[in-house]
Image (spheres, rainbow, N blue to C red):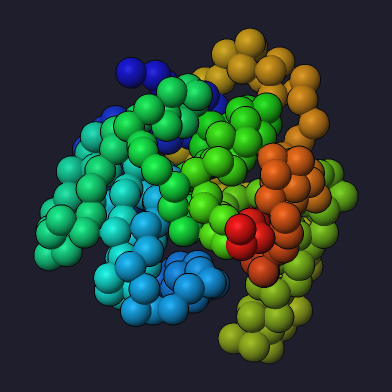
Length: 260
């Protein structure tokens, strides 16, 4: 068993923490965003496709895929046993259409329990948790041969933003909040006050501290920005890549293989 999160932000081995996470990330807006993943899969809804859900957690992406493709076979991969236990309960009604693989994305051996190729590989809010940019790049390289010709890899995930892009994102969020406050109160609040408030609300609860070796490894590789990740996917072998949308820190990335 490896550490849940090299940066110490999450404890995926804790059943209580996992339940809190599921409650926080289960809502209609998130489900609508996940549904976009399923709708981008380039196959007829009546086809019997195979889909791999990387870091599938409690099964929200697998669920929207199975709703869109009722004849699909889904393999859900995750390394959190509490998440897999919840996914098994949530997806029980799909019977043999769903199977599970317990493995760790921090190790290249995460693919050991998989066989064959998939018409679609999907993921959401998972791959960034390995934290190391070189490992994210390797996961893309390891994913490519799993995608069948004509298939795709779709990843809705948190994306590292450089200093200037990160500042622009934070500026936009504060400006949105400022307008919201004005609509509620009729007053324009200074951005400095909004920044202080958002900083207090946005501080994550840490479950540990990254080691100096972890921070050194992260800093020693080119960052996992949107531009770099799109390039890594092309270098992994995909024929076309695209960003289908970006909202604050998250982006929906697609990578496609040409038909044989």
